Amino acid sequence: MKSVFYLLASLGLLCSTASYANLLNIAPESVEAQAWTIVDPQSGQVIAEHNSHVKRAPASLTKMMVAYIALKEIQTGQLKLDEVLTVSPVVNQVMWDESQMRLKVGESVSVDTLLAGLIVMSANDAALMLAERISGHVPNFVARMNLEAKALGMQDTNFENPPGITMPEHYSSAADLALLGQALVNQTPYYLHYSKMPNFSYHNIFHHATNLLLPVDASVDGLKTGFTKAAGYNLALTAKRPTGNPYTPERRLLVVVLGTPNAQKRAEVAHKLMNIAYTYTRNEAVIKAGQTVAEIPVKKSNYTWFHVKALTPQVATTSLYQQSFPIHLQDFDQASQRLRYTALNGAVQVIEPLTQTQTKLDIHLPQQSLAAPLQQKMDLAEVKVYQNDQLLRSFSIENQINLDSINIFAQFSNWLNDLWHQVKRKAKIML
Image (cartoon, rainbow, N blue to C red; front, side):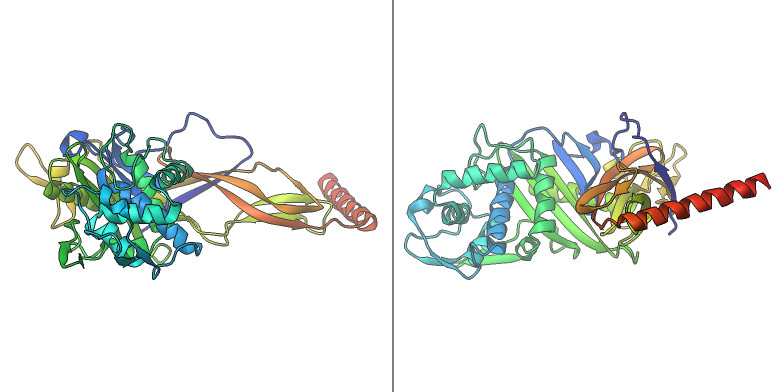
């Protein structure tokens, strides 16, 4: 597949009226969910969404935050997977009809087992045990949950309890839960070890994973299901698939659907949204690792130019759907992975994804020159990525600058050298 890139270097700011594009126009009325979003964690771009910032009851999707905090504690050595805890009376807060491991006060259980019970079984007693172990008391842990949510940019979220029990001030949104899902796969990927487990058993309680897509789609490896009467049926879903592109060999997508009518429908809707996104969008390596994107003149140094380089590869998610009419979910054929429309004459039209896109980079340089001595990290380039004049994403490129100043004699020598070159150029013009 080919991709065409245009590179523009700019010394001025781009028009502030530019807005991020919703890559796929999916008709909301065709999606049987109250709110939903599709996100690419590699680029951070929203592919499509509906009511994604509406505050709703998250139900057991709340437990993703419990696992996120626990796995962060493990990463920093404050908690260990093989640590054995003694079950405390906190588990008595769990009502008989709630999902639980049936932990008994005084028995021993490992953190690893609690995490499996939390994610696969959606056990409320596991959530309370982990909360108490990490923060000492459940209210302290809830405060930690809200601090973590704020740090992740979850602006539509307020947690009141670790398990996800319905409470008036316990809410989140599809967009916020997608942010949390991105944090799980990017920062604490061991979460996926649990979320792709097909089943879990404890105390002779055998529990099949409620993510119905795990046995259907081998690329699916998480994230979490949830249900309460107030929330409806919720699902945060993620999958990773090969792309055949050497620059982006694998691609992960994340879908959150909230308020679907039943467990089968939440799986069907989330899977179709994900497959449409895989078929009609792709990731393109707009800047490769180590690529020089700009040069900035340097003063009072042995170096004449500083080469601004991207230390990590940068990708942009682009649309491969060129039709003017919106996508209807019922028109996507799961077998062929293509949209099929029936024309007025009865003929079936198959919509193939584009093989080539028009992508433009616009690079703004905040620093027009650098002067030695200079020893610091600086944002040296602001990059905006466009497709067909729609802004896809923007990011900054930061470099460590280590410039030593040269002595006065070397500066004078450089000045004479520059002066001599200017004289030669003028002489050539006169001739």
